[in-house]
Amino acid sequence: MNGSSCLPVYCTAFETGKIGRWMKRFHSLLVVLAVVLQSSSFVSIHAQTPLDLVAPVDPETRVFTDAELDTLLGPIALYPDPLLAVLLPAATHPDEIVLAARFLNNGGDPNSIDDQTWSDSVKALAHYFEVLAWMDESLDWTTAVGNAFLNQPEAVLDTIQRLRALAQTLGNLQTTAQQIIETDDGAIDILPAYPDEVFVPTYDPALVYAHPPIPVAGPYTRFTSHPIGAWLNRDWDWPSKRIVLWNKTQTRPLTWWSQPRRDRLQATHDLKQWCPPPRVGKPPTKFWAARGQQFHPANNASGAAHHSASRPPTAPATTPHR
Image 1 (cartoon, rainbow, N blue to C red):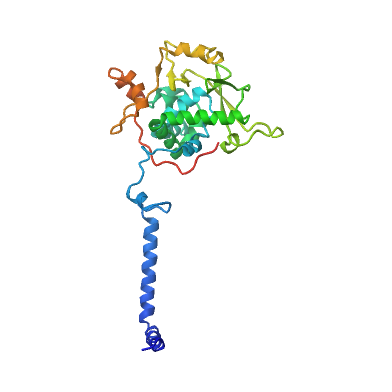
Image 2 (tube, rainbow, N blue to C red):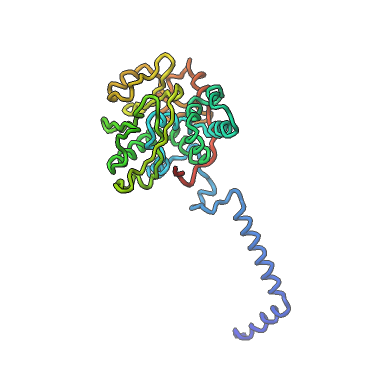
């Protein structure tokens, strides 16, 4: 039988509609299968390997690369130290960020912020609604920052210093009327220029870390003034990689930020440092375990009460811009 003799058989089948009906049913099956694949909650169109479908990455334990940390932390690396010392711990409580933003958006009295049950870092951040609202609107990014700070604290701090050095080299991080830039032993401090006022910077990370300023256009960074109250009671000790906590018996001296770093840090030797509370089923990193000794065993309850564990959603795909 040659090839031409088969042709009438298929032609006859089409004429009687058998193959036509079969093709229609096959096409319908393909359409249904495509819809199922696109709508299924466990199949991602962004998956790169079959392993991604079998063992998805836990967002609470995800390890970020240096490049990812640069992108993640770029928008906040140039924040003044006392505000950054509040923002990073607050990012470990994304659920409370939502509650605080909802409270203020619904007309809550700003004077009653300190009476709320949120962690101290979120209470402090709530006094800077511009920043709080931005973190609430970018909750996936906020959660990723908090998780990175919990799981990779040293990498986070190193990234912030690397980005600051890059911006400084390009001429985009300098002492101004709003801030004092101090470099000592390779670490860069960004300090408020006034004891009662902090300026929140707004900038495009794609510019400040990549291009020198254009004289005719002016600096890339814009500042918004906010008051400093007793709530902003944290500072960075960059050489020791710790956040120090001022208290009612040891308050920050009014001239503290205008002093050289070595003179400033002499006043912080007896201060406690911030440390996240234990997380159920997740042992702390060596970095936090060493610092958490101040809360164990006697002070662990009070420490955990001030820093409740977070329940974050998934990590972000993009970094927000301000």
